[in-house]
Image (cartoon, rainbow, N blue to C red; front, side, top):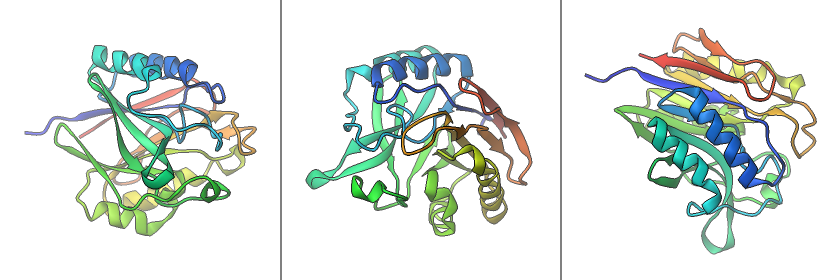
Length: 234
């Protein structure tokens, strides 16, 4: 019988472009979260700096996160730019565990000036964790009904996203999460960037949260950096 899944959404402070410093903060969040899955915001390892160099899964700067996951038995879903085929780049989600990192999803719906640097991912993705199927999303994906429906068609138990919104749009993630939950009867977890970052986000929304399939919020962080929300999916 499948066991409940502990999940956390974290919003660590971020130093622009400084992957090494941010990896240490991610590692601290993994240890503090005490969860099987710890989700981080869009481009959490670099900040929303669209000129940041791509990160490879073998990058030694990821070692602190790998070590933290090995200690806690966690899987960290972190945001980073990655290289693709034929010189392409993607906004991606890396899955990091005690064995290392893999690119597990590439953002499919780009916004703003992102297409000037990045290429859209080609397909939805699901991560299987202990029998739980987690559909993956990054920011604008969550506002596209087709993305949720195409991901749900793969068979999912939860819809998990790393996002970035400005403080003035802090209600948008809740609206999107409730829509996905209502349409597909799945839990939703969104890790939302807090603090400030590039792209004009002088004040990011934070307020990461986890919702039940009926749209009820299980736990929600505040707008401050360093906050973590946790829940048990059953």
